[in-house]
Structure formats: structure tokens, C-alpha cells
Image 1 (spheres, rainbow, N blue to C red):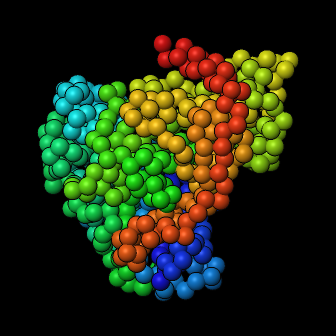
Image 2 (tube, rainbow, N blue to C red):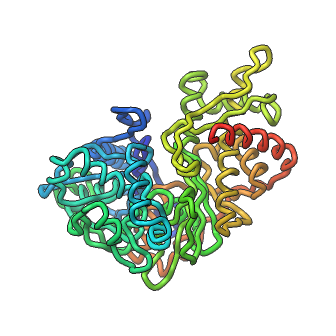
Image 3 (cartoon, rainbow, N blue to C red):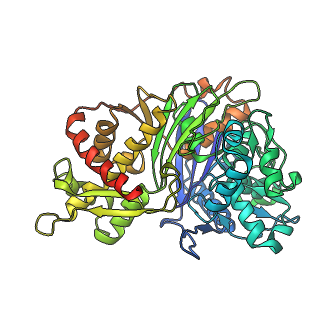
Amino acid sequence: MLLLGIDVGTSSIKVSVVDSANQQCIASSQYPDIESEIIVKNVGWAEQDPEMWWEHVQKAILRLNKSGIYNPLDIAAIGIAYQMHGLVLVDKDKHVLRNSIIWCDSRAVEIGDRAFDGIGHERCLSRTLNSPSNFTAAKLAWVKENEPDIFEQVYQVMLPGDFIAMKLTGDITTSISALSEGVFWDFKENDLSKDIIEYYGFDRGMFPPIQEVFSAHGNLSKSVADILSLKPEIPVTYKSGDQPNNALSLNVLRPGEVAATAGTSGVIYGVTDQLVYDSDSRVNTFAHVNYTKEVNRLGVLLCINGTGILNRWIKNNFLSNEGYEGMNREAQRVAVGSEGLRVLPFGNGAERMLNNKIIGAHINNIDLNRHSQAHIFRAVQEGIAFSFRYGLDRMKEMGMRPNIIRAGKANLFMSDLFIDAFVNSTGVPVELYQTDGSVGAALGAGIGYKSFSSAEEAFANIKPIKIVEPKAITSYEEVYREWEELLIRELS
């Protein structure tokens, strides 16, 4: 039996086919070959066209089918992972009403802060586990305040994965995990948050029917099946935000287990069975993929907007011909600490970890007689690693103290230099796995389809390909402290 996983990323769509018999990926593809556009109409805004995602999903699947490695008609179930926190609005005819306001958009910070004050900090945190801040609820309120004609037409409020499932099946559903990432869920009442809905004046009917993450979210329509050469009526049996899904793909499902990613944004994601929250909402808590009303499984999520996007910016503007491998080779020629060069990577909107401040990215201490582009390449990766360390220290305040962190060998975790800086600045070993979000979505589909007797069985054959232990903590600690002083100075 074959399983199809779709990962709706900010930069591209990736799809994979996994054989449920051995849990191995047999084919993968992505579309487009260059990064997808982010629409920036004003400073701090970030939007994408949901119909662009759908077009790219279709092209990625059709490209994958052309590989000839498998028979598309053998695919039995579909799973979807997606960029978190994006707002998608459709009317009663299921037509998109406006571009999606995506995760790194900062326009709704003040609206979220007002709700936090209006509802009350302690009440809000103890029930939703987060400040409304810049999450989906605040983005919906921004539309209500600034685009009332559009808001009046809203039939359903969705996240990006809900939209792709709707295009595949015609049905619209959501989950507790999805609602919690939008700060629409009250964990004390185990229901939609009355506080959020009443404060913002939302209609409860705008929210789709709630299903478990691992369950039926509709069946593939015949018209779409014909386009994609798949069987009609195969079910979508899994939908998850990209970070809970990344944790799933790394078999991070039990309290105390921790995952990390370092793509466009960077994330550390730890699982707990406690309803914990950060009093300043710098670190956020959401329902994990295996959360139920009976069993607490929460994901404590540290998100850093400005990580891989800075590395990409450097590549595009300094060494576009040789790409990331060329950057890494040059950076390796420079010693730890980049000879005093320090980089703050926070140039991608409001950073929750920094109390939603926008401080921009900074390259500090440039010596025109000493520093080369190689120093910049290294300082960028060190600065990104240090931002993880800074955030992990905030997570430790919430009781998250990982003994090991699991990560897929992808994006910045393909760089030996970055991994070295990460493990030695955090002091935590890293286990690397050959997996990604689309493979995790496929395995999630198998769990939802009941191809496996349990989630544990779905990962029986998933083993680490490498374990990296910290060996130079002392060398990095002094450099980190200098970096932290620069950050604190910018925040003051």
C-alpha cells in the first residue's frame, strides 16, 4: 500500500510517496524549482495566494507521477502538512476571498496585544496557553477591522492545509491542533475559545467541523483524481501544521522528546503532557498531533522567523553561482567566532521570542581590513545557531531540558558547520534522520488510514543516520555571550 504526503511550505511544495510495508520513501518531488513568491504590500506584511499553492501541489504530484517509480493508482491515502498560522478565507462557494496572511506577517501584533490586555493576561494564558499576539485569530480580526466587505463574505476560516484538503475533496474540516495554533482553542473548556470569539466578535459558524488529526478529512473528488491520475474517493486521513508534523516525522510523540528544524524559519519543538505556558508568550504551546480531550500531548514551540531566510539572502547576494555548498566550504576556512564578526538574524518580521519586536538583521563589528565574505558566511550560521541557544534558554524556564534533539538532514542541518555551532552552543547532541515534512505527512496518512496498528509501528524502521555530540562547548560559550550582549543592547 502506498501513501502520499504533501508538504505545503513557504518556499515550495514537496510531495513524497511512502511504502507502508517498510515505511520507506520511494519517490519525492517538489515544485517550483525556485522559491515561491511572498507578496509584501507594506512593511511587515507577508502574503501568498492560496490558489498558487494548489497549482503547485498539482504540478508537484504530476511531476512525481512521471518518475515511473510507482503506480499512482496504488496510492491509498493522503496526508497534508502545511505552513502554520496562515489565514485562508473562502466564501459560501468556496472561492478564496483574499491572499493568505501567512505566518511571518506582522500586521496584527497590536490587535493581538489589545486582546491580550482586554481578556486578561492570566486568563488568556491559562486557557489558550498563548497570547493572541500575531496568530491567526488576530489576523482574522485585522481583516474584520480593515476589510469589512471581505469579512462579511467569510463562510469558513481555514489554515493552509485545510484549504488544500478542500481543493482535493470539496470538504472543509479542522482539528484541535489547528485551532490551537490559531489561538482559537480553550484548553480548560476543551472547546472553541469563547473569550477570543466574543472579544473579536467572530461567528462560531465560521469555523469548520472539528476532526481528530488522524481521521477522515474528506475523499478525493473524481474531477481532481482524473487530473492527478489517482483513484477517486481515496481519503485525506491526516492534516497537521509543519512543526507538529516535523516532530511526527522524527517520532517525537512522547513527553520529553524534542525536534528541531532550520528552514526558512527555525524551530525547537518539545512534547509535554502539561498545560504549560510562557508568561511572556515568547515560547508557545499548541495541541500536538496526538492530543485528545482525554490525553494531554502538547507541543512547546520556539519559533525564530529569521534563520534560513537570512542564509538564503546571503547566498543570493554574495555567492549565487556556487550556492550553499560553496558558502559552507568558504565558511569552514574561518575559525570559531568569525574573528569577532557577529550576526543577529532577526530580519523576517516580528519575533515572538523577542516579545514581538522587529529589530531587523544586523552584521556587527565588520573590520574592513580583516573580514571577508567567508567570515560573513560563518558568522551568519553561528548567529542562527546562537538564536536557537537563546530560545532554548527560554524553553528551559518552562521545564523543557532536552537530552537530545532530533532533526531531519535538510536545510541548515545539511551544513556540518551549522550543526557544530548548534550542538556546541546549546550543549545538546543532535540525532539526524533522513526524513522530511512530506514523508512525515505520508506516514501520518498511514496512521489515520490505520495502515499501522499504532504510531510506534509507523516508525519501526526509522533510524538515525548520524549522532553529533558537542565537543567544543567552551570555544562557543564566550562567542555566544558576546552575541547575547549585542542582542540585549538592541532590545533595550
